[in-house]
Length: 329
Image 1 (tube, one colour):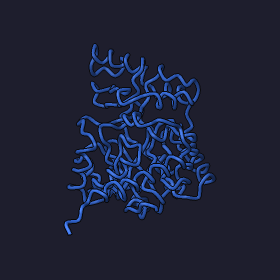
Image 2 (cartoon, helix red, strand yellow):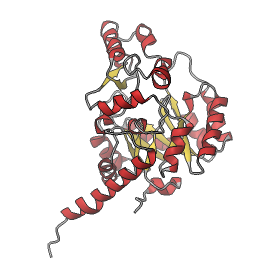
Image 3 (cartoon, helix red, strand yellow):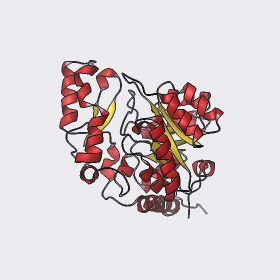
Image 4 (spheres, rainbow, N blue to C red):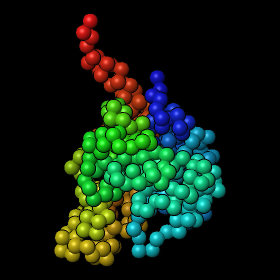
């Protein structure tokens, strides 16, 4: 029995599960597999080297699925910022109707995508940012708790509080993001007011994820203690896999806090592209993953994963929780 929420109704998908944008992971193959499984697959725009390369990736995804999929646009600090406008233009030219935005100063992009009829899901790590995105016209918020892989912000608030807060303060719907990996969490997210879940790390450990098997094995073997935080000294905190490269970054930050150039060579995206796509070496680069690693025990297909999550969520809601309500009659 499908679980219907505002997320599934608004996007025309079967299950309230989103595969969030992930650098060097969010390619057409994974996005299509998630969408074909009934969730929402998302292509990561800036993984593509140019806007025209993004166009080709979108067109490839269209051939792999006839179901809805979206594109992620993340706005982060960079020494040489990408040509965001060109990427955004390609998204609307290719008639993509669902966009996940994230990062700083999203105003002009939320407005741009809304102008072209897109449904905008903005990812936030703080309620004040979510309220701003709501005011700017975002259709839905992806509330990203401190457990998440990638950039959790600087407030260090976990989802147990963040989601309950969002339910109280937001007027637009939201989904839970960060630390999500199973059906029990989907049920809990719905109970806290969310319309579904957004998962990144969990989808990395699927058969269709276009990354090296050794990286998937590292996720299966790891636990909740296998992540660490880097770049705190430059206020661009990132949760990453705890390895030798991340240890070096932390050591440099202790000695030279705030000096990005001192560790820039260690956090280059090209480093973990090689780990993901070529070498499979989980130790030699700084790569994002979340604490949900603790809940990853296997590498299923996207279809198997989505179906298991939904089935487990249904069991929690219809059997475990329903059985706790005792009639006084």
